Image 1 (spheres, rainbow, N blue to C red):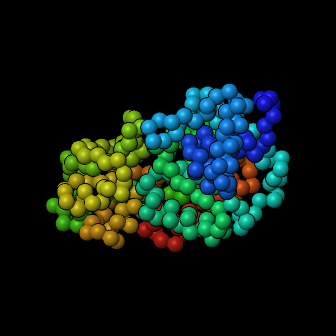
Image 2: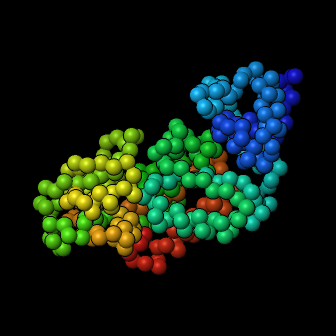
Length: 313
């Protein structure tokens, strides 16, 4: 078979096979039978002269050559979509496409559920997938560029300049501790804060000062982190059984104070509020589907902000 004979449908199958590393998942996502996708994979192997997916233990993994095809395939499919589906034709009520958002887990308890609710209300037939920002293969910037993420949401002291960005809302920093902590309410002074043992949330990709420590430093304050967790959702349960202090956003702290015997104390300096952004790549800037997703996320952030001074504001 000539390598030039390949249609847009095969390109879509190829892109999905590589990014999902699974024949069965590709069949589900594209609404086709598994045998049909298996036949397509054989054709694609003949066309490319490469096995594309190979077995590694109990799973399939892309070959090195297959990984080099992801970006050109993403660009080609985006171009085909732009030609065949003009911007004015996108209708969230009838779409069945999958949208992917990268976000940190500190948004899980209050922001992401609201996004899912709004998303399912406007696009009942579509899929939405969330990925942790710090575990996205190749980093979220590369994922936005390659198309494996449509959007990234989080707070950055210096968002990447090469990406489009939209501020969503702000949230201030507070100190969270157990309700019966030896530090009495209203007694968290600068000295007490700096001499205490602190709990921090970090990841395997974290380097240098994090966003919270940068803001504390601006207020002339520092903390000694003696215990670290990989996820924000674990921190409140550790606080319940220790005298650790945890500096976090008011939205997260308020949520867990409503569920657990914890309390909030003001930080003994005046750190700037953290700004939440949504980021996207220029490749999706003019996409009507991506623009709809951005409007939805911005609308959710706005709806959370003004309604409660104890939430994101």
